[in-house]
Length: 183
Image (cartoon, rainbow, N blue to C red; front, side):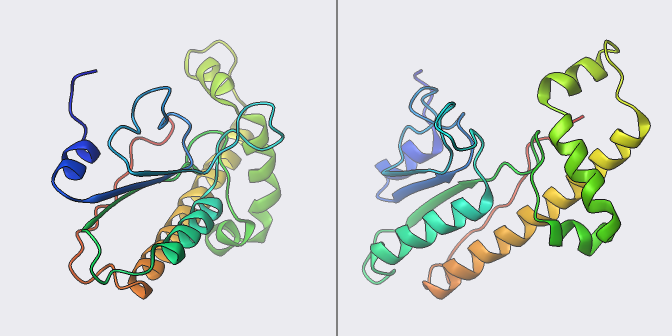
């Protein structure tokens, strides 16, 4: 509380501020959605029947719908758009075609198994030496991560293409960054 967030500063400076997030940490509960005029939450609540962690395809769809309803860039305020994707956070999610493109079709089933098996809690137990994960699962988890990175890369490209078609990239500054990945 009391520390100004970028979205708050930009909104005060006349920007339209929008976030499309697959991360439940960016919400009114944490206060990290402060300053956004529009918050496109692309995740479900626990027990809602949908995954808690959203995915990039959902973010892309929600963003597409919002942009189509916005009416284009003509005469609009400058836009600050924040997008947060989660595929590269446990449990890793990926499109099988993305993984197969870099690791081959044979890697997909093992990667799916490892991604379903290794939760945040299981990874923490492994890292602390409490419950080691076998080498085959570690190998397959690496493939799942690679697939997740490729999926996020593809979705990011589709988002940039969408923004370009809407005429929003001409004077844009685009920053793409990653926070950490798993250990």
